Figure 1: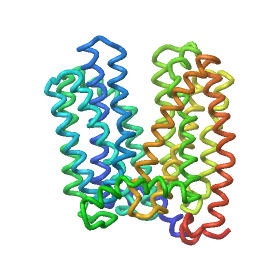
Figure 2 (figure 1 turned 45 degrees about the vertical axis):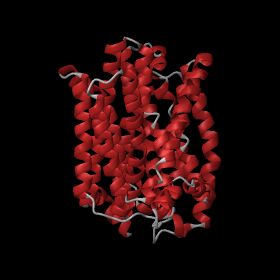
Figure 3 (figure 1 turned 120 degrees about the horizontal axis):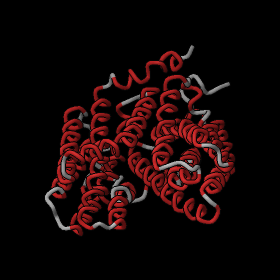
Figure 4 (figure 1 turned 90 degrees about the horizontal axis):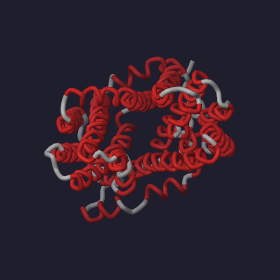
Length: 419
């Protein structure tokens, strides 16, 4: 029996045994909870001030979209400066901004502060993802990524309901104050629980560090590495798989269900993701995880093809949940493989660009699915998007199989490179 096989059942325990990981995990859990609460608070605040659905929707969008700027333009700072320092500075900056927003500033100023706050989330996440491989090794690293996925998905499930409950007891302004406090606590956890490390790249001057941070090395690394490029492409399939989430309301109407069904449809994928991540990390041997990335990518979109046939609500929920159960494992394994394969000096840029691109294709996917649904109906739109994804995923899965065959020393763990 291989070491990976005997250890896989304790991978989660091994990850949490590392104090630095516990600090990083707790910091992100707090930030996620604060972010979800802030989204509800801001939506309520803008609605109370303006009674405008358009401005409320715009504000909600601003809690996501500027992350694209932060992840693309500023992720390189986490390669040129200490990643621990970048996380702490981003958290303290966000705490100060959230506290300023709670002071009752005019709406245009509120929107501007929100853009800055959300932009700072990009380099924070890039630094965190780039730091994790230094904190965890082997199967415990994949387990750590799975814990991160489960934490984020659980926050999405609980955040909006819990946030609404909290805002029901306190004012939206106090919700923003609580968000600021979570950032301060997060910074404290990182400061105390994560040891000091130097920057991954060691330019001699501030000017050269900043220049290299914005040099686009991460994009070049993604494009030039064939296996990395394939993994990146497989992750971008999320742009097709996001269709049910974007069309949750019309799907519920088409099924003759009420607004409660919208929440069920939105919850199905996160629930599947949590279950799939846990099973994959705990029960799949290390030697198999890398080999089945392409298969899982295809399997993640095949269930959604059957939404085309307008199934009942329970079946529809099962199909969406099954999609999430296959998708989450291959996404976290792809992240693990990419982080290990790229040079440490550009790791944050690659991680930031990948996560940013993922959000972008999901936004584009929702818009395209919405346009197609306007012409054909939501069930056809989801089915067509999934069919295109299956056709696209097939060649990429074969390309990944070839990448493993031609470069096993890069992709496969020791002891599993033959057979």
